[in-house]
Structure formats: C-alpha cells, structure tokens
Image (tube, rainbow, N blue to C red):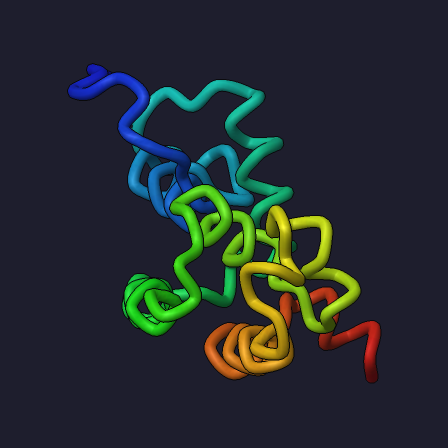
Length: 128
C-alpha cells in the first residue's frame, strides 16, 4: 500500500470496510485474494457487524450533500456517518456547540440520519 496524500482527512467506517473488502478480507480466511493481516480480519469482523455494513457510497454522498445547510465539519459528518445517532441526546456529544450552531434543527438532522442510513444488522435483531 502506498500513501498518496498524508492526512487527507478522516475515513468513514464504510470506507475502511470497502478497502478491506477490496484487499480480500472475508469471514473465511481461506478465500483471501491477497495477504491480509490478522488485525485486518478483526477490524473487518467488527465493521461487518456495525452500521457500515448497511451503508452505500451513494447514501454517504447524498448525506454529505444534505448536510451542507448545517455547516458541519468533515470530522463531524464522518462521526455522524460512523455512529448513526438516532436521537438528539446521542448527537449532542458529537457536535461542538450543538445548541448555538444548530438550535432547533437538531431534530431535523436526526431525522435525516435515520432516513438516510438503515440500522445496523445487530440493531435490527435486537429490536425484533
């Protein structure tokens, strides 16, 4: 792997999962296309059970576009994508000066997150 640009920005969990898939990481180590480190298997396994496994490039790009009016930083947007908060209480520690920056539009942002990103596979089984 070659680093093209240092500190280009934070990655979402989906991007890390997509990268690991492209390297050949899978649940079955015998199906590996390229040498994959044991730590990559652990990260892959963790991300497969997170909200990243149910996200798509299109949904992330659309979410980033729809977040423009909220004037969030790239890191805040990546954090929202990774964690997928479902209430104002969960979103409060993720955005600095939430009340002064977003005010009443916090609920709109939460609704946007819930609408754009489906729950993780683990959340679906827990809710049922």
